[in-house]
Image (cartoon, rainbow, N blue to C red; front, side):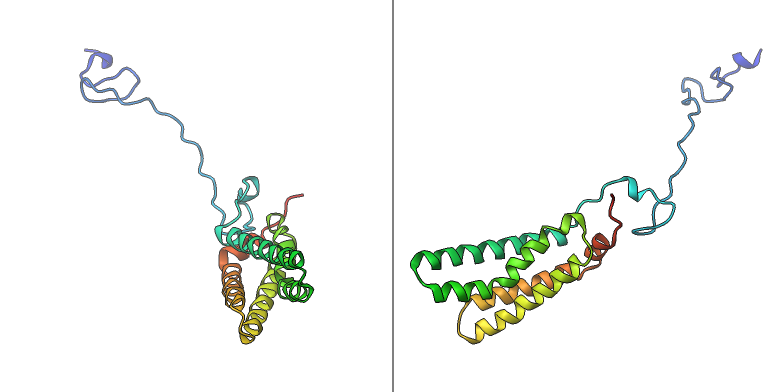
Length: 168
């Protein structure tokens, strides 16, 4: 009896049980190194686009919403003919307007945009305290949004997003 006629021989040079032929050997692709973190040498992270983290996106949306509400309130005050209210709203909403401009820079990870946004959110918080002290309920909203933005942008994933190298 030749080796090809023996029971369990599959003809590919490998033994197996009768009736079951194992799959022929296939070469496995080599393992690629996983980067240890942002900017890790030897990794392939620079080849894959990184999506903006949810925390950064949420802070961006909050700046957009606060800037939009400030602009809407200012336009309504001007339409009513109340110049003093429009001026007060413009000063109160100034950090939100500047934050909106800063938030437009989040996708490109411009230098210092995270620090500037945290500073503007802190300024929004302090203006909110002053506004609450005057008995205006809008101050509570400014405080809540300011604290939320500071917390969102102070998280580790947000820091990784802004420290990641910018592609040309």
